[in-house]
Amino acid sequence: MPRITGVDQQKCTGCRKCVQECGFFRINRETKKAEYYDPMGLCFWCGHCIAVCPENAVGHEEFGDAPCEFSAMPDQDRSIPFKNLANTFHALRSIRRYKPEPVPRDMMEKVLDAIRYAPSGANAREFKVAIVSNQQQLHELGEGVMNTIMENPVAKATYGLIFEFLKKAYKNPIYFDAPHLVICYTNADNGIEDVDAGIAVTYGRLAAEALGLGTCWNGWTMIAFKMNPDLARLVKAKGKHWGIFTIGQPAVAFARTVPRPALAVKWLE
Ligand SMILES: Cc1cc2nc3c(=O)[nH]c(=O)nc-3n(C[C@H](O)[C@H](O)[C@H](O)COP(=O)(O)O)c2cc1C
Ligand code: SF4
Ligand code: SF4
Image (cartoon, rainbow, N blue to C red; front, side, top):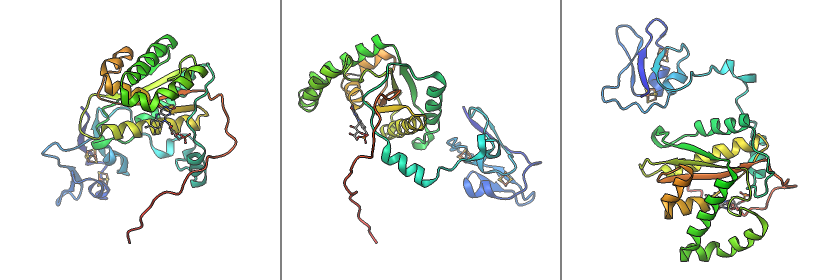
């Protein structure tokens, strides 16, 4: 289990940044230095105290990899100019045509690293990830998803015709013949895992976009897994909540953004 082990009194200057960041730190009146005080064990391992201390004085165990000093980051540039970010939001499309070549492992690891850094409710980080790349396995899963949806009258009414159309265009219509399916899944149940799944997928998709990869959410698989959780066993992703997307090299290039309606906003002033 991750653990904050205390404050290195030799390094601490008493600057109070940890105290301002987290209620589990206080300044000792005599030493004028910080101490960690969490008698109820309420720390939820967010790591902010580690990141905020200018002296790297906050001790920790089992949080994962070592924190990276911003000054040691590659090219030290961690801000995205807003215009680039806005362009990405406007240009990012769901990709439904893929080249058959697999995504190089180093690129996939970058996508997974983005998912690793996605926020989660209460910093629970309960998600595991399964990447399905075997085409036979993807085919069997796609068939299972389609059959499950078609056996449900309400779901069939919504998706039946789309599936008929897709069957004419793809060998594996549920996954658009993509080389991989990324499945984020968890068994945890604190009421907001579905949101966590959405954020995890969104981080992964944004990283993929920046790498020139194409992705598409696969709600069909999520719906089918909810109807028939045993289906998730096929790809060893048995859980209660899922966030799922296809990923691969895009075989389509868009020329412009899509039109979108204005957002319904109430300015309650
Ligand atoms: C939660 C969620 C589930 C989705 N599931 C599917 C899906 O099962 N199949 C599919 O082709 N697209 C799926 N999509 C993609 C949407 O259809 C797509 O985002 C929408 O049409 C807008 O297009 P864009 O992403 O290119 O802007 C899903 C999107 C979201 C957010
Ligand atoms: S942020 Fe670091 S240096 Fe500042 S008071 Fe806390 S432990 Fe001490
Ligand atoms: S890891 Fe987060 S919750 Fe725990 S002591 Fe540090 S700042 Fe507070």
